[in-house]
Image 1: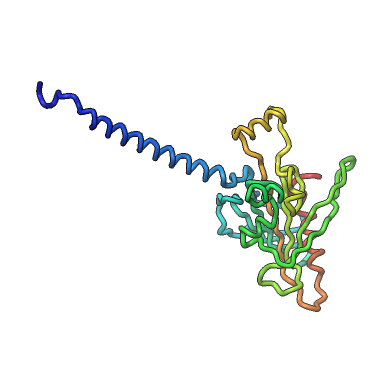
Image 2: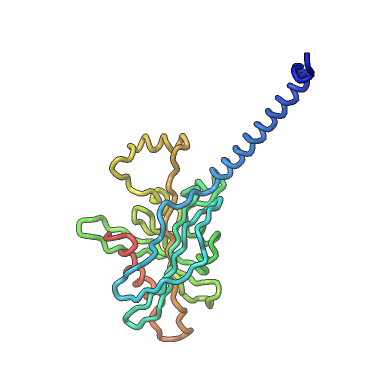
Length: 260
């Protein structure tokens, strides 16, 4: 028998088999680690902010934005859109920032039990510096509802930016859900980040089973909205900035959500 036709010794075959098993286990471990990391991160928002706007009573110019889409463990966001809103009435101009966001969990309670942050503007402000709000206070403003529809209120946050003087009101924030609810807190946004069911969607029980099985994910998402205005001079007689911001929000709401 020639040397090349001799059978491979059993110990050598065993070593090759062991090496293959080790490589396979390493690949499985790496795949499991990647899958766990992806699963524990927040999914990307399914909707993007509008790239252009038309609003009666304003001249609107798009502004550059340096914030591209980004996926994060607690919060993921789409492309940021920024606009300059110049009222035709001669009032001070405003800056509008739109940022679609999505979190892993919805409510403050789920954030505590699952170790994550709920869907709220506090989460957005903590992870996206441009949305940080100082001296925040929350107001409720009634939405002009269509005849026959149920009246409801928008939850808005008012405050100032990091560089603005103490006591000034320069920013208005809220988050618009796919169901057209505008709110600030995770408690108010919980359950509202889901788009209404469409024709052809599975029934509610089937959707719930798909989520339990990991085949689909709940849409804990909303469109973060921020309106900024220049601070009024201390002691000046300029138009109240809070009134200016809230009026601009009322004008803008219908453009972002459609008729109420």
